[in-house]
Length: 338
Image (cartoon, rainbow, N blue to C red):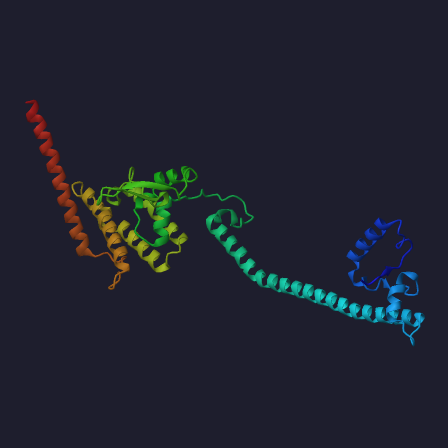
């Protein structure tokens, strides 16, 4: 077994071994590279190494020479161990530096991915809660009250589909404004499937309110004149093309200035006015349906006299049928009481 010693006051004191071990352990934890540097060559001339010197003492090698030989062997061995120890320390430092480099590269590689994930999460948050991310301009309150459409009407406009004019009447706009913050448009509502008899679920925003819906042909001309500016503004806000907006605006303006609108015959004035409303709703429905067909749509602002006359005859026939049914009902009631 190789004997070694550490330099330092009191460290080799056999009466104080705890101080020796504690100081050595703590110091080498801080400077492990000094482990072999702290070792000093033992005194091989001391009686403790007499047996070792005896193994090397011969007729030509004295006891002092044996001690010197042991010291040289110790020094060479310690130098070799210093080199090996330093190699281990350098290798550990190299591995630690390589590990740090790999970690840094891994973090650098993860940064773009983490940034992409962050941007995607922010984008999803903006899509889900876009209202709170809209920049508010610094300006005074508008003098004109805000027009709030129902979610159903807004979805129809954004898709460019046909939408009933009733959703743009003052009554419906007031209703939409009062209930705009009461329901979640993404909530699911049940509807009955007339084909299968089962129950389907649709988003609340996609459900049309049919309880108070008034068909276009039953609107009054006062309501119609109020509706047109509202729907034209809504179409512009929904980014409809100028061509479509201009065509519909010209159609409604043409109907308001048509001779039927200025009819003075008390027997036909109601039929003439309703014919104009029926004509525009039938034309708008057919026009929207034809836009996405191979043949395409047409210039709807052109009022076709033949189609308008046929519409007027259809309205007149319905009016006669309804009047005849009402007359028969009154006659039946009179005969019953008679």
